[in-house]
Image 1 (cartoon, one colour):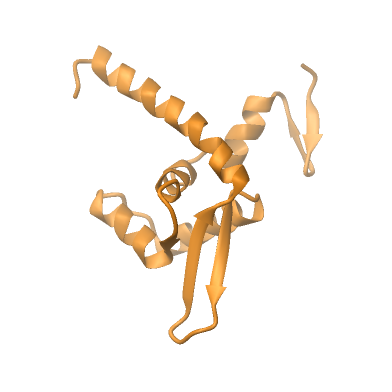
Image 2 (tube, rainbow, N blue to C red):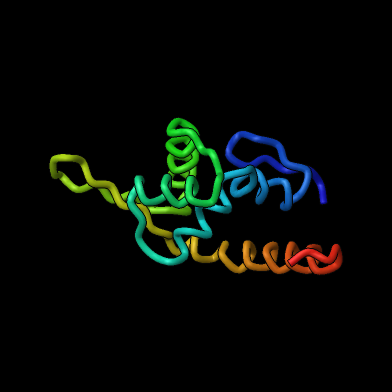
Length: 117
């Protein structure tokens, strides 16, 4: 497949494009959490801390903004004090969950091969 341009960037194949959109340390874990429904910012942050994952406020905010901009998640703001913001998957975000599930299954298979549980 020849290289192609998408949103001003050159990609060599569709896998590069997909990884650019949902790859990295935090995007797939965020999408995975949101598969269970609506989450508030603080709930997301605490869910990472509970699992010993150290995500900074700046990084979480950046990743959420990118996922919103790319159409994977919806951000709903309520006009209340203190501010209330909720995040949920869009239809596009829901379509990526089977991909993440396949990666999880592959990871589980690798763990099993290595004798890990």
